[in-house]
Every structure is written in C-alpha cells, then in structure tokens.
Image 1: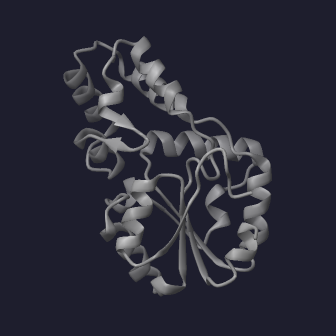
Image 2: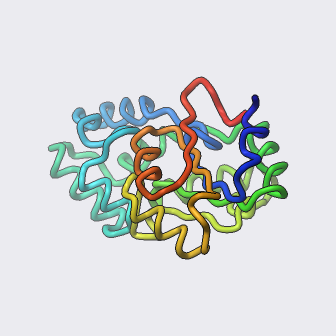
Length: 206
C-alpha cells in the first residue's frame, strides 16, 4: 500500500519540513563549524539533540547576535557572526521538485499544515531558496498554516507544541496524522495523541 492510499483515514496532516520537503545535510554544517574553529558543534546540535542555546534560538528567545556571542563563549572560537551564520546555513540543500508536486496534489484532499523546528536565519534562507526555485512563490502557501518554532515560542518534541496547533486549528487528534523524519519528534506527537508516520531515509514521502 502506498502512502497516499494509507492516509485516506485522516482528515488533517501536519508535516515536518527538513528531511521531508527540504533536503538537509547536518554533516555539512558540522564540517563548516569545525572549519571556523567550533570543533564541538556535534555536542551542541544534531538532528536528534539540541542544547539550551539552540533551543533558545529555535524558540525565538534570543536574537541571532546573542546566539553568536553565546556560541563563541561555549566553543572558545573567535568566529565572526557572518562565519557562524554561513556555517549554520550549510545544512540547507534544496527542495526536490517531485515532492513539491506531490504536496500540491494532496492539499486538495486534506487539511495540511507545516510544523518545523527552525530559526530566523534558516527561515530567511530556505524561504528565499524556494522563492527563487518557484519563480516568486511563497512556500507557506501550500499549507492552511505553517508553524515555525521561532515564531511559536514552542518546539518539537515537546507535546505542548503539538497541542498548541491542535487547539488553535480546532483539530481532532484522532483524525490528524503527523509526518516527520526524527523519531524523537514522532514520540512527542504520539504523547499529544496524534497518529504518526516516521519517514526513515532513504525513504521519502514519495
């Protein structure tokens, strides 16, 4: 049974972004940080783990400048703000066109939403990436609403972040599917009562 057929029981779908519609390479960012002298980056951030510093950035509780200052303190490196943001964005690759076409096809059959752990620098980067790729379109227009952690002040995998979306959109958790490529986030969604689908690479939503 393909994914499209197996989703017929749901009315609503909440999608993750990175690894689902936007290809990521965490190793590229780790290498870029090592190259600018931040050699303990993997201890600070990965697909499956984030320290308090990165959680503060991804929930919009510190500015980009404050993030850079605290990262220098945590790492002992002397990297500039520009170097840090360039390294931080190295993980963002591209939007595979076939996945966007699939998304466009199913948005007429389900109420679809996006929920991404992200931050303002990354948001600006991938928004511009899609804008150029699509000839001037807004990626958020695929969804009834796109939720970003830095705007919400909440992030995955904490169940309250999912409950916030369910409440704001008046969604029934029993009719709602959450799709993500990170197991920790899947587990948090289950605690909030959602049905879940864990996409494991090299599988995709396709």
